[in-house]
Image (cartoon, rainbow, N blue to C red; front, side):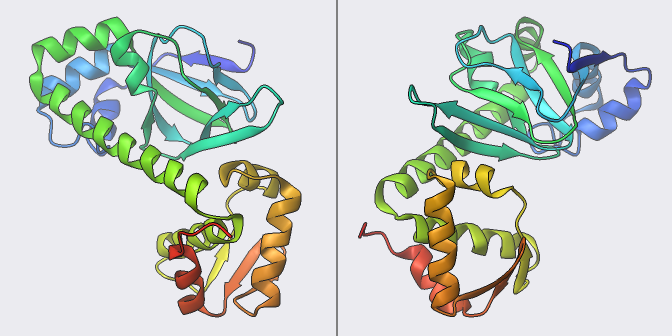
Length: 239
């Protein structure tokens, strides 16, 4: 792909130190990290560049070294549903890397990203040699299942204002419980992440603002009534 660059890594030891900071490889031995470093490939992808497409053969999995990646599905009528946003040290596409089937969704760079790619066959050979890595992969699969279960619950049982409330509280949690947060996605992308369309999202923002729960100033949102926002986010009955 024209928006993808394969970068040769000269400083392998530096890469191995970085890999140890990720959740999936934390606590591995020097020998195991060296083996991982030998098969890793660093990829640089421009903003908007495709990482893989739904339905193409899975050739491996990725760790985000810098930047952000969205993994999403597109319905037959063209509606996009963002499944997850991955940031630095997050890993993705590990499920198809195990089963060798096609990617179940597509991935795209939300901004310029650096990815560390692990080829499927070479990685599976490492799992046979080092069961400790396999155990960590199982942990990651369990975490991913929980995330997808939560997504299904939100889309099935919560209306857009409830999903928006949960998203704003999550932003606040990541900002040390700040009462002022900055949207980390454009509204079109945010709508796709919340399983709706921009017009419906705008109405949800208006509702929360009109009720005095939040105040909006461009991409900055002030959480004026955290208790009501929490109560709304936990509501599970669709209106």
